[in-house]
Length: 202
Image (cartoon, rainbow, N blue to C red; front, side):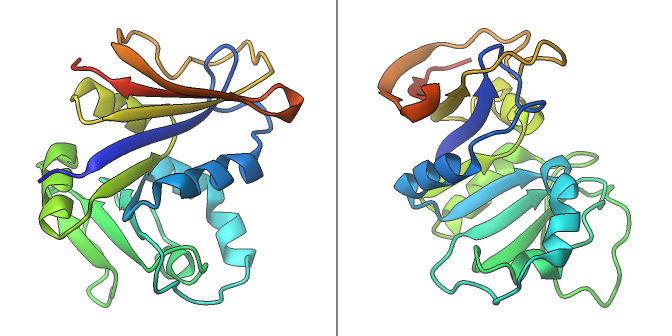
C-alpha cells in the first residue's frame, strides 16, 4: 500500500517559501508529530544546505530516525555522507531516473531508479510502501510539493504561515486549484499560524 503523504511547508502570508526567516525550531517541532518513516526532499533544498552540512557536527546516523530520500534526477547532490552522518536520519537514499548522469562507481549511497528523464514520484511511493513505509513527510520547496499535488500524491497539507509579506517570487500554489478540507488550526506566539488540511483529488 502507498504510504500516507504529508506535505509540510513554511510560507509567508503571500504564499512564498523563501525570502523570509522561517521559524525552523517551530517547524521541526511540529514535524515530529507525524513520526515519518521517510523524509522526502528535493535536490534544490539540499543544495542550499550543503555548506551548512559540511560544517555541522556529524554524530552519525540515528538508528531510530527516518530515511532521508532525495529526488536528484540530475545527480547534483554531493554531500550524501555528510547528510547521513548529521544524526537526524537512519540512512540516505538517492532517487534517480534512467537518464541521470553517471555516478561514481565507488559510491556507497543507496539508489532507487525510476522514470526515464525524471524521477517517477508515484512509483517511488509505491516502492517505499512495499518496503514498509507508512508515512512520508515532504520537506521541500514549492516545486516538489507542487509536482506531487499535481499528481494527486499528497494526502495532507500542513502550512506554517508566518506574519510577513515577501512581495516577490512566485507563490508555491500558483496556477493550482486545490480541494482542501480543514483538519486543524493553531495559533502560536508571534503571529505564526499552523493550518492543516486533508487534500482532495486534483
